[in-house]
Image (cartoon, rainbow, N blue to C red; front, side):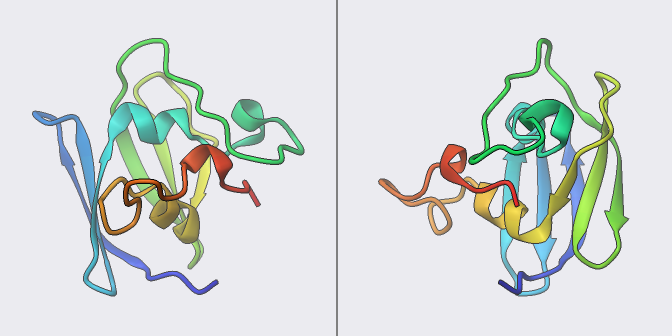
Length: 115
């Protein structure tokens, strides 16, 4: 699956959300704790998970740093010290909570494959 590329990210600490705008014009607003809770790294998800599991952070978190990983993903350094998750662009789109991406009865992120 070829996913649109994020072209801009903005932190909104007052709303505790991360806004990501993509090359196809789509805008996603991710709650910080939800994005952190779906971290796809092996420490959070295990080494061979069948589906993504939500692990709520112990305390509210915020992204301190956001960096590209090649031309296919973003990585975050979170305020809880975690920084090993690589969020592929297609995973970010699948995690998008907007009604167009996750309509009522639509796919639940917990059912998403991690690879």
